[in-house]
Length: 340
Ligand code: TRP
Image: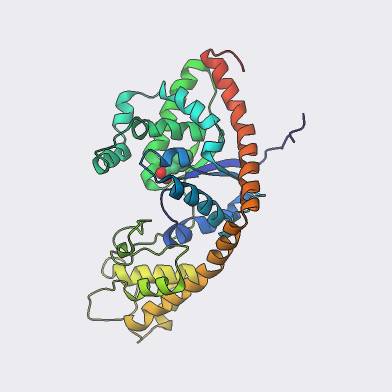
């Protein structure tokens, strides 16, 4: 056996990211920033979910670019490819294979009840395709192939993880213990960053600048413009004070400033006492520019190094498919296929 047999004292964690939009300041401060440190505690698998991305029509050149850009950005944010398995979903054929099998163990009624399916069908009424409908079976396959202990996902994906449990329990009920049931993982740290122009809605990776989002790859000029236009609250106080209910705009800016500098809300209030919003907004902008600068520069450098990127995703796919194939063999045997 040439493949090293790794002792596995660490718990395994897996998550997928759909390369359908550019990463934002919100995804960075809220999640990705903390992922680098996780690899000390967990055996982590992260993949670019390009198979999932095509459930909505994509421009092929954009999809290719975004998939690689996202990989470069994750590395630039501190995810070390030596310590984490980073791969591209379509390069590990077991995902599509198990996805098909699990389709046969997911019920029409269950898939019909998924809120993401209902939302996306409403938004893409002219393209309600089979992939959109069976998205959760593929996602269950992504997870179950790796027998992870934890699956970190956002609130909007919890229903999919629950359906993954239902499918796995059904399969295990028929064939014995094939799949491990992972627990959802709620990270202890991570700030929830809201839109700069609509501070009661989460900052989204929308195409549209007007939605008050800041992208990881935005230039300093764009970032400063976004912060200068940020909505502050219409109270007459005009003072930097944290109150999420009454002052959502300023409070969001304080959360961002705090996440970038490590300062507490009390310290920030003191620092900007008597300054008003006019001074606070560009100050937050400048801090964000400096926080994102090294990430942007590193991601740009990595993007130019195509040979390095290729070595990362090839090695990632090799490691991932080694683990995935073990599960796949078991599954094919259980359902009655002839071994390959
Ligand atoms: N559905 C997830 C999203 O839209 C992405 C995803 C695909 C995923 N497969 C996964 C997340 C497996 C966790 C585990 O964000």
